[in-house]
Length: 104
Image 1: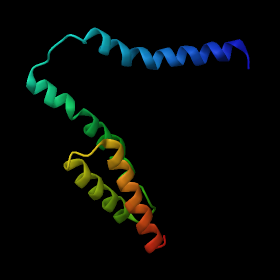
Image 2: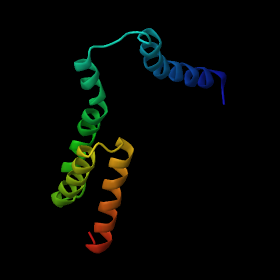
Image 3: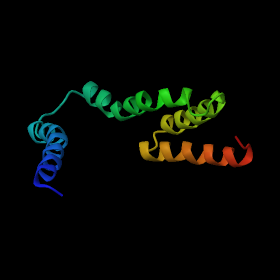
Image 4: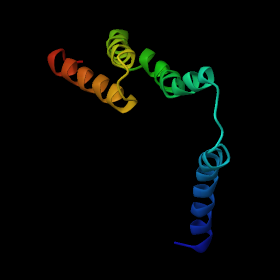
């Protein structure tokens, strides 16, 4: 592997690490108002919804109900306040079981 590729990998690593690390360091001692804390606590769920929703519409060609079932399961788990990773895994498990029961 050439040195230019190694430097490129290091540069890309810094470009993704610094924007994540700097707010943690800069805002470490800042106390946010309770309303803003509640809003920021919901950001992962909002981002998850924005990333997954287009996939709901195109999960299977001509089988929109697969996406609807997966999104209903994800919504139910997220509404219960379960961890985001468990929400995704739960939807995957349900759709996997359905695909074995009803072949595509």
